[in-house]
Length: 562
Image 1 (cartoon, rainbow, N blue to C red):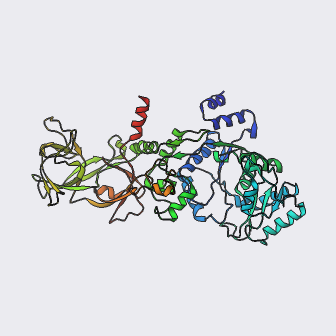
Image 2: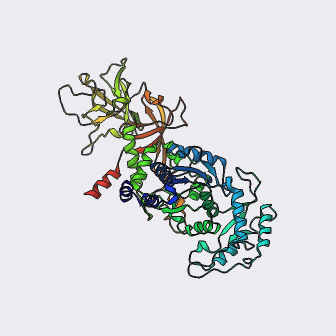
Image 3: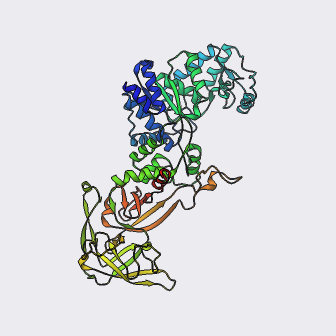
C-alpha cells in the first residue's frame, strides 16, 4: 500500500521503480549511478542528475555509484576528476567506496568486443569517418552496407587485435556492430564500438591504442556494476535500443534505462562544448567564474547547495523538455539565504555624510543583530562617528514622488543609530555630489523616534573613520538574451554575451564583515547577498554578488495566481 501511494504521488521515475519493486524485478534492490565524463566541469544540468540518482537510491535504501566514463583520452584530465568529486560531495552525494571508472573495465570491454566478433555481430571497417556518415543514410533513406561488413570472423579478430597493439594509424579502422543498415533508428545502423586513439589516458597511460565508444562502454559498465536503473536524459532515448542490443546480444545482466527531461534555463548555456569555449577563449575567468553555470562557479558565487536542491525539486522530473525561468533559480537562492545568511552593512557607491552637530572626537558602538529574525546568529558591535558613508542613490536633491530616503529638509533613520536631517548638499563645479551635511537628534539613539513622530526612510551606513575598503564584484547574467543560442544570422551564441555581466566597484564595509571566512555568504543590507571570495586578502576583502534582493520571480508567481 505504501509503495502504491508513493507511485501515485511521485514523479514517473519513482512510479516506475515502484512498479519494478512490486513485480520483484532486480530482487527488490535499487542501485543507481552518476556517470559523468571527466572532460569538463559539472554544471546545473548535472545537479539535476546528481539529486535524482543519489536521491532515488537514498529513498529506497539502495546505493548510488560515482563512475567516471573515461573513454576519450584526448579530452579527459585528472583535474576534471578532482573537480567532479568536489562538486558531487558539495551537493551531498555519498558514494562511499563505490568510485569506479570505465577504464577499470577496459579488459572486460575488450573481451566482450571479441565475443561480438565471434558471434558475427561486429566487424572491423576500413571506411573513413566521412564515408561512414555517407553510408549511414538519412531519416528517409536507408543506409548502405560497408564493403568490409562481411569480413570473416578470424580476419576481424586478427585486425581488431592488431588495432589494440597500435599497428594502424588513427582513423584508418574502427570496430562496428553488425545490426541493420535499414533500421529506422539511425543509431542502430552499424554503430561504431571502438576507434583508434594514440593518446595518453589519464589513468592507463599509453597501454591502450583503442578506446570504446561511450554507448558501448556505458551499458556494459552499468551491467558490470549491477546497476538496476540507468537514469539518463532524453537525448539518450534513441540510444536505448543500442543499450539493449549490446546487453541482450552478449546475454549479460541487463539494467533498465529510463530517460528524463534535461534542464534548460533561460539566459544560460549548458552545453559542455560551449562552456569549454567560454573558458578557453577568455570570455570568463575559468571554470569557477561566478558567471558560469558550473557547480564550482555557483559555489564561488555563494549559492548554497540547499538552494539548488529546492530549485531542482520545484522543476520536478518530467518526460518532456521545457525551459525554466532563470528568475526561479534566483528566487530559490534568495529563499535559502534569507534564512541562512547573516546581515551586515556595506556601501557600494559611497557619498560622505557629515553630521555637523555630532562631536568630532566621539565614537559610539551600536549592538546590532547578525540576523533580525534569528537570535542564534548573535550580534556584533558597529562603530558610529561624525562622518559616515551612505549610498549615493539614497539622496536626491529634488526627490521624486514616494522617495522615502534622504533629501533636503527630510528626516531619515540611520539603521540602529540615530535620526538625521539633511541641511545641505555640496556639489563640485561639474555638478557631482561631493558630500552631505546633516544634523542628528541626540534623543533618537538606537534609531527610535523620541516623540513618536513618523520617519519613513531607513538607510544603511558605514562609519568613514572605521570603514574597511573592499572590492565588490557585481555579477549579472552572462547572456543578455533569454535564448543565447538564438543569435543574429552569421553569429554564434557568443554574440549574446552580456557586456555588463561583471562590474567591479570599490566599496566600504563595516569592520566585522572583514573577518568573515572566505566562502561565507552575507547579506549587505538593502543591497544584496554577497560571498567573500577566495581572492580576498586582509588588505582588500573581495565579495562576489550572489544575487540581488529584488525578487521578480515571486511577483511572476503572484501574477500567475491572480
